[in-house]
Length: 191
Length: 176
Image 1 (cartoon, rainbow over the protein chains, first blue to last red):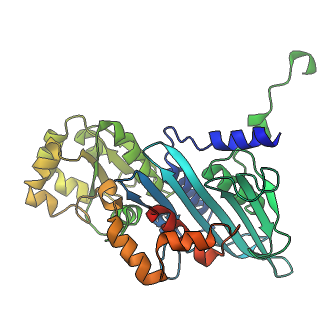
Image 2: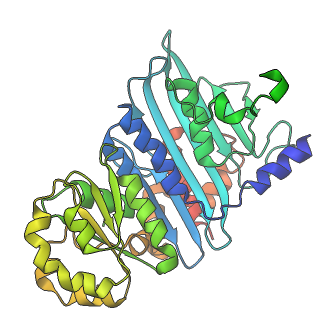
Image 3: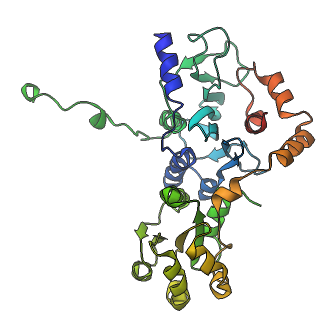
């Protein structure tokens, strides 16, 4: 099972015709439409490219200093105050694949408890093995230093799928895959 | 210079001129350029893709019009005559031209049209290009170590703090 998960994670690096910055930005645009985010942050999902080596980096530029990697604030989330969203990804454009990504949401849960949810795709296998440290995993805890360090194995998600999943945890009615669109139609006898 | 998305966003949402010009690399990349602009649009703007100035001229003023003409040269040549009509719009028209193509050359030779293009013509792909040596020097100045040294120190850290995320990804871009 762990080998199969690793292989599915590696396969998910293939980008095909996907435009990662656009797909991530489309989610920010929807957050803007739902009034969880200011419109200027659509323009803060940006990218830089080292075209000689075929590398591209995508990241958000935040609210305070406008620095690369600084999170953008989300508001109006009933279960998370002071919410901050960080997005970053490294691409190999020449070969058309994802090298790594981070989709991170932090804030204060009810009771003023700090909460961090961070979906990470590693550049390569880390730690001891595919069970304890799957290539695509999600940290869930109060912060980045909390022990034990929990790494929940994720399905083979691209960064925008990971963003959908993270947002589905905290944004009311954020559901890109309603059951009606997922489940097979009932068989004739069952109707 | 601002980065490509920031530049495009500023052009779409700032200024009073009715026209934004976006260059793309080749015809195979035009669809990607349109998708990029759509992702930066105000969610309240309906979006209309058109292929002719005639269609752009009659588009509702509150729609974002993405004009991707087959005949780019003629389109640019005919633009000046539509200035007053386009000025009535609430939301700009975005004209897509292939870099170095006939439309781009006519535009460069039309100072009167260029004078009413917002934020100058934008080339997101060109704007995104870094000078790796300059960026490495900047990284060293700001962080105090080379990208490779920073990554070596942090590569085994399973989770960097959020403040370091920007440094991590900059280092990954610049790493030799």
